[in-house]
Image 1 (cartoon, one colour):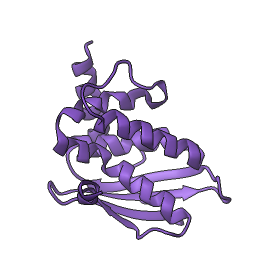
Image 2 (cartoon, rainbow, N blue to C red):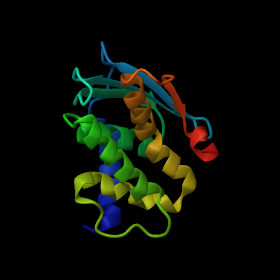
Image 3 (cartoon, one colour):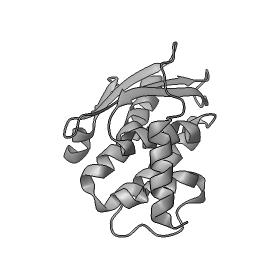
Length: 161
């Protein structure tokens, strides 16, 4: 199976049968949207008590294209159980992988695992926003867990920063 076939298979699998889909009580709730295409994510994250608390549970709801939904599903699998520092490190690795300049070097970072298949979106700036939507929401949830966020993130903000 070549890389393109693997990409399509993983994206379709996660978008049709998203993992960790649903709401979560007693959690940080963040809304993320991409106004340019209508993708929308509601992320629910429960952190363990303490400053370096692990991601105890993470779920999402929402709607959008296959890339945004698959990225959210794959992200929840990757981040569950990670410390805040580990999760933030993965967020930066993923951002560099999908939003970096030029061709994505192969192989991708081992820590990202299956998420490396999303590196193909870097050729399409509008699709980068789709892939990053849940991750931007998670970044906001990290801030919320420290009490300094707004609870909403938009991919349009990324263009202006």
